[in-house]
Every structure is written in C-alpha cells, then in structure tokens.
Length: 294
Image (cartoon, rainbow, N blue to C red):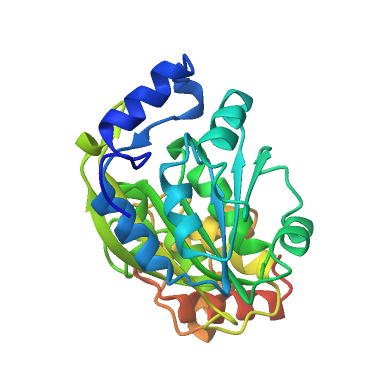
C-alpha cells in the first residue's frame, strides 16, 4: 500500500481532521502518526498474516488500522473517544473484517473480546500507538491477564521502552523491567522522532516488541508476593536491598533475621535492587515466603 491516499499521509490526515472538524484532546494523549515507513516497521514487527488477528488500542483516525487490515485476518480497534467512531467507520468502510469498539480498554473484559472477535484466527497480537499517559497500566493488564497473545508491538515513550528492555545494573532497570521481562521478551524495534506526529508530542518515542512468553523464565510459587518483594526492593533506589526490605518486611525487628535470609538466598545485603536479576528475585521471594515473611 503506497501513495498519498493512505490515511497516514500528512495531506490525507489533515483532510480527514478538517472534514470531520476533529479537535485533539490533550487529556487523551492524541498524537496521530503520519510516517508510512514507521507504520510498516510496526506491522512487520508483529509478524501478521491472514491466520492472525490484531487488537489495536487507540486507533485515532485509522492510519495503523488501515495497515493492519491489509496484513491480518481479523482486526479489532478499541477507541475510547466516541468522536472518532464515525470517522473510523467511514474511512475503514472497505474492510469488513475490521471491528470498531467504542470502549476503555482498561475496563474491557479482554477474554470475552478475544472469544467474540478472534475465534476465526489462530493467534492474536496487540499492535498499537499507545497514549503515553496510560502505557504502563494497559501493558500490565495485557500481560497479567495471561491472554493468548503472540506479540505486543507498541509505540510508547522512548524512556519507558528503554526501561522495559533494560538489563540489571543500569539506571533504567527497575520494577517495570522485571515485570515486563517476567511475562515477555522485550526488543526495541526503532526510535521514532517527534516530528512524525500531528500534533508533535513533547517526547521521543520508540517501538517495542514484547514476545509473550508461554511461561515465565523463573518459577515463582506466589506471583503477588514475588512482585511485592520486587517493588519493596526499589522503594528508594539509593538504598541497599537490606535497608529497603527491612523497611517493608521487618519494620520492628533488628537486622539479624533479614541478613540470615539474604544469606540463604545468596544475596549480599549491601547490593542495590537494580543489580539483582530476575532469577535472584525469584530466589529471594521463595526464601522470604518459606520463612513466612509476607
């Protein structure tokens, strides 16, 4: 698909905005992508074909939806802004396998949506240019609900993408890195300059692919406890893991018991949370859980 008739071309985007008298709502983080090369990279990263379905979140006026419709066997676009629904239905009228839903994805029962909209396809990927103000809640919902997902390919704030893909030891590595890497394998696809959007956002963006894991890379008996230990370890980044864990789990006790449990988990008390790997957090959580520390 090429040429100036694409929804993503700057001229067509402006024409659609003018024709429908659409005005951007800053509160919804609306930035429409007008770069066909970036759209191609997003769709290619998802590895779609006619046996695949695509769930898009925040389709805007349908620039990415149009590409997904050409690549996938079934497409559902969930848009929170009801003003965009008639525009989407109009500009995507040529694609009967595209379903437009006016809804807040954070409130949708995604298992029901998958059963209704993707019964005819073999696998599903989420492909979206996400509003930056709800990136993390949306991605964590998609991952935590353990949906039958193949890939999640999203355009998000560059800084957040770097945190998701970060390795232990760097300043970007934190509880978000661990949560995302527990459920998926993240890979940065490309950096996206702010100049390829209408209106231009204040930050640089990046496309990231999360290859959803069939099972986590570590065994965890209690996921809720595991993530509480992770969160506690990053409460104050400058503090050692011993100090952070003491404040959360041992507020009234001395340090002896905590240090003995850290020794059992083979973790030096002087280390900081950002130096621990996923496997070390799993081991630490298991030791604390076995000792009844919850």
